[in-house]
Amino acid sequence: MSFSEFMNKLMKDEVEGEIVKTVFYSLFTSLIVFGILYYLKLRNISGFMDKYGFFLFFSFLSYSLIIAVIRQVRAFKEFPCMSGMMIGMTLGMIAGFLSGYFVGATNGMFYGSVFGMVIGIIVGGINGRCCGIMGIMEGIMAGFMGGIMGAMTAVMMINDNLKLAGLVVFIVSAVIMIGLNYMVYKETRQMERQRNEDSFITIVLSFILTTVTIWLMVFGPRSILFQ
Amino acid sequence: MIVKKSSLYLVGIVLLVVIAGFFFFSNGSVTGNVINGVSAQATNSGDVQVARLSVSGGTYVMSPSTFKVGQKVRLEADIPQMPGCSKSIIISAFNIRKIVSSSDNVIEFTPDKAGTFNIACSMNMYKGTFSVVDGTGKAGNYVEQANTQAGSCGSGGGGCGCGGF
Image (cartoon, rainbow over all chains, first blue to last red; front, side, top):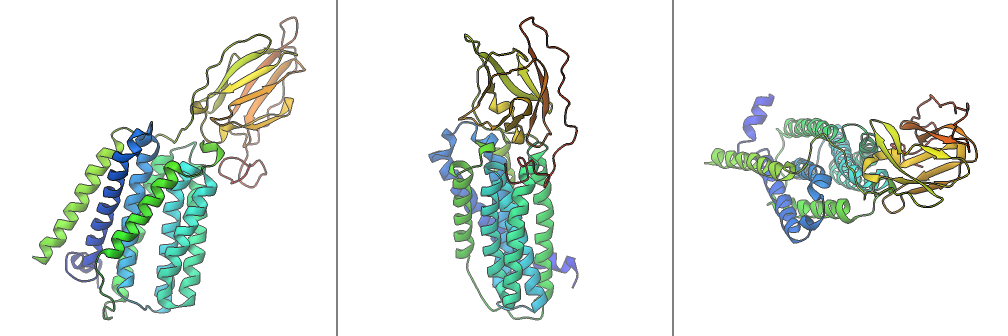
């Protein structure tokens, strides 16, 4: 039950094997959506890449990691209480923090917080459902906190290395997400897979998150300090 | 075959990240910050003393930085040169407190006393000084004492990072 076993499983055709596939599909979908929007509209915006490119790129990467965990969790409908709470909390916190950070960096504290909270609460709450009300509560609380913290961190970093801090935040979050993948793998070794899904949800989620993020960052409302 | 398929996805992810990364970062700096807005050109006109306000190295820079007492001053903020909370400006000696933006980048006031005065952001992180001279062209001996206490979250200053103004 070591980490190397888990890494080997990533290359096989089981739930863990679908993690890599999901990351690819999610990233591919996000980049296709972005590419279409870029050539239709976004490239005409002055300084677009300089202002938004970095944050959009890492938003897409973040979504692909989060959606991969969501798919892994969805394959098993129920988890023990502690595991479910951990899943809800980790997903809610990371989803809220990352989305809050990247939107907060371009739109300001309020809009970043609200967006981060919405994403964090929805992702945390729905995925924490796998162990009942405790997991849902944990997910909602973590999403709420992560959303605000992400946007606050971004706004406080504006006078410092905002983009480098974003890179550090992303790397730490990616390690946590991989840790969560491993935890779910360990917890479900003795369990039967309960849900088989194709990549439809992955593509839909990626599409929605990508379009909403692009719209909010580029055309959405922003705090006065960011106008 | 299955192993090959997963490896292909892995290679695909790496390729996507590299290609997208190249595309996204070919125009931008990784260490820079978000700076929005339009530039303001300072000009001199009539009875109004016009100066350009910007930020350099954490300090407010006015150009020119000397004004005459009793004559209206019009500060035009160079928004692209003013990151984050430096847009939330306080000149306490003349009761000025304003958040400038690309759509409203002007601060106007009439100095009624001579001396050296402070300008700071609402968090007291960005600071600067300017002089007001009397009719003889002297700034006098008055030097406003700078508030050495930098703002922080919860200190009531509001502004950058703390969610309110």
